[in-house]
Length: 173
Length: 102
Image 1 (cartoon, rainbow over the protein chains, first blue to last red):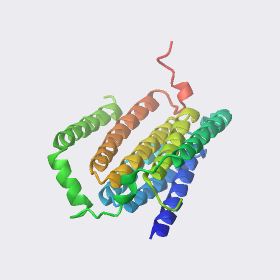
Image 2 (cartoon, rainbow over the protein chains, first blue to last red; image 1 turned 90 degrees about the vertical axis):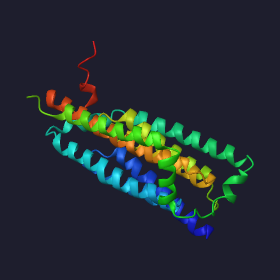
Image 3 (tube, each protein chain N blue to C red; image 1 turned 30 degrees about the vertical axis):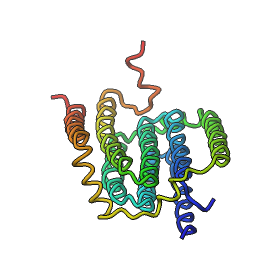
Image 4 (tube, one colour; image 1 turned 180 degrees about the vertical axis):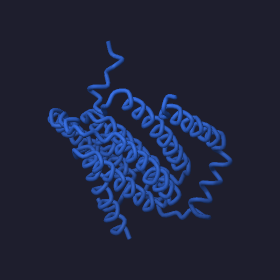
């Protein structure tokens, strides 16, 4: 059972990072958006392996089904006929590679350092416990009792964002 | 190596975070920069949900849901700004978006 978990995690992690690199590196913006959609779906799959099904479904509905569609709309609306808007990415390619090299060194350093520390006792022991009632029901309980005020504030925030987006993007009469 | 601890998820989150940061710093197209910001937010979400699952505390998942909501609001407003700017000056290259600089 540990083997299946490891296979799922490593496959998903490789694909997520691979598609993430593709998002920031391809020339065509529409291709970037499509790779971002695939990235979000893979992250949702990762949430399912972590037994967080509600967050996975919210990720698919809101991120892959709402935000990325919005990006696609804007990309289509600002379709420029001049190809030179992509010309500058090659000029900064060296800096991108340098940053990536620094990041890789950092990650290897973190991994080596953490491997030499004693493992957290709580991490391995608590992983297999099933949450009674399902993830959605428990999350609903917590959202409406402990985190009620942030929930209402988030609703107001979404309302403000909606009004703001309409005001910003409408045609000036 | 076979035992997937929260450290593995933290490393994945850190790598995805840095991919997003590199995207923000290197690309000149403002829409790709916004998409890299979404990658950053996803990386943070992966970290939150992983530790929520490891410590059996739903607070991490609640935080992740709120991060998704805030990301949706920010994407809507940001894209509205891009559209308004594009209507004035026909470009999405941030090197040319320097109208307010001296």
